[in-house]
Length: 197
Image (cartoon, rainbow, N blue to C red; front, side, top):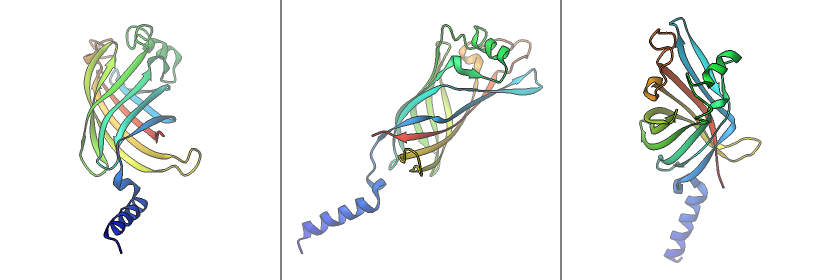
């Protein structure tokens, strides 16, 4: 039997049996139907106020074989902030906090990625809020990577992530002097990202 034929056949069998073995960088789009971004900040030292941003979009380029995250962006609509209290939400939208008339979007742009385990890593990126940009480290866990079992039935990543920032780093200082509103804000993310064609 021809040696070249054997090599070609073996390679074809390997690719068929292990499609991710020859993975390449691919673009994944955040599924806005399966995305949660929660934040919490302490209120007068009594209890944390928790909220979410209801409108988000984003995508990133990721190589499942090498674990390399080469680029990406998440974009949150500032006006979509929600804490289950209308007056508080209106206050969060004004110039004391998010100033949504002047700054409609909050963006996080990926600048780097370091693996810390088989399914964990730290994403570094630039967070732009109130027109100012600062670096942020986000701890990330890849929960699952597989073909979706129903619906769109596309290859999908399931991701959890968290970070802690100081809002004063972006010039948001309302309530700090009286310790009415905490400076540290905890961010938690959970989302699914679908492989784009």
